Length: 514
Ligand code: FAD
Ligand code: NDP
Image 1 (cartoon, rainbow, N blue to C red):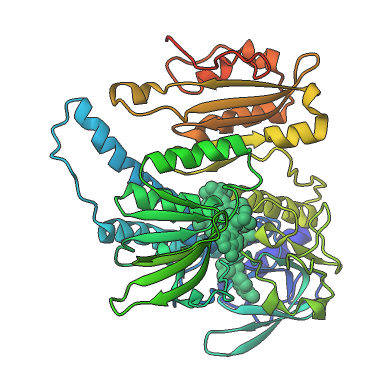
Image 2 (cartoon, rainbow, N blue to C red):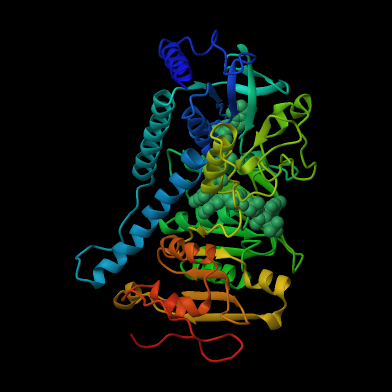
């Protein structure tokens, strides 16, 4: 033990003096690093920092390929630069617009209509993101993780070639390798003119307002971006090919889009774009087909944004050279319960891994637990069940566990009890906001104490509400336990505790009174 401490002190000294990269070896002495992580996003950074705490020699490669429109960003991956963080900040910017309108009802003398300045919001958000990039660099340095701004490509199962922006190549060897390269937005190049459009990678880094915008797609990215664009006062439309929020409880998904529609987002349902053309005015003319009427329609927009999925970044990695198998349909890396791939000593975490939720907290936790299993004598596996999530649309939707459809599919309709309520947030009352879509649904087993299988909440601060209940559901909470918990008054969350009308009863689920 003492020898190990002396050894690791020496190694730390070597790293401090900058010798860590080339000469020094990892613990086995056979490879340069004990752990090499490809991808410095949510999962990769968490894994590499955790591993370094066990006195291992760790390096992380992160390289951002510019978007087709030329947008680039710094260290931290999707969430920090073009995902959760700028999205939530712009969502907050949009919510403030609503708060300004409400404020008048509370006596604030604000001359309406107020104007929103995109440039100011964008600059503030971008500066904050840059501060996070810097923070990640400092953290890696503090934890003695070697950061290499190189694009990684496998040479064999213990060797990766890193290539710099200028084309300089470096060979790196490691005992263990973690693939954490995430995904990037899809460009449907089969649609003529697709290259004229932007993706969410560009939206957050625009210097000027996108103006009148069409967002194509109907999942998380599409609805959230269209939501905040509408909220900051832009003429915004969404083009939905089939259903909104595939995979989510569809009753909830439709309430989310109904609210968006009533607050100004135009929704083209059952439509697909077939061509995009640049007009002399500089605007983009979109020609689309309505799948129900089979009629072609057209309209011009300042900006068209693709939000049609995020394929994994596996193509450029030469995974075959390392014997790492992917699912040819999705392109994602096939992994087992301990994140292992088909190649020994190679692991995959986060968005790149097949069948995992594409969420930052799961990538982070999976990365940390993997490092602990590799170097910290832990055997704890990542539990991907009952992961809570929130869609940050103008009226937020948070959920954990099964949708009503999935619960029926797994257990049969006769074995499911659904409690529900249309409630009115107090925040909406004086402001006279429409609460038609504020809805809570709890899906339970019907027998016995009625174990809760899923909880769905639409309303203000949905993420904050659902996070606490997620603990209960993880601990197999039952309807009786929930009903015996006293609520906090006056909150929206207390309406979850007060749920008492079942769908089966057919009674009116509208909450009345205090
Ligand atoms: P990433 O964070 O994508 O990191 C991968 C890194 O690897 C990137 O920096 C990439 O440039 C780099 N890389 C790729 N190839 C190579 C290579 N060959 N060599 C070196 N480096 C490489 N999740 C939430 O939980 N909450 C949210 O609110 C949320 N909002 C989102 C909003 C948007 C618009 C988007 C797009 C995503 C959002 N997500 C959200 C999802 C979340 O961002 C991802 O699930 C998460 O970032 C995945 O982490 P990761 O480590 O797998 O990959
Ligand atoms: P998804 O793969 O979830 O959805 C793609 C959407 O695009 C679907 O609505 C799909 O429609 C539609 N689509 C695909 N191709 C076309 C086409 N050619 N024309 C029209 N529509 C098309 O992708 P996202 O990019 O929205 O999200 C990726 C992941 O990122 C999510 O799964 C989520 O985990 C994560 N994320 C998390 C967030 C959060 O936590 N708040 C926020 C944003 C992203 P159809 O259903 O018909 O196939």
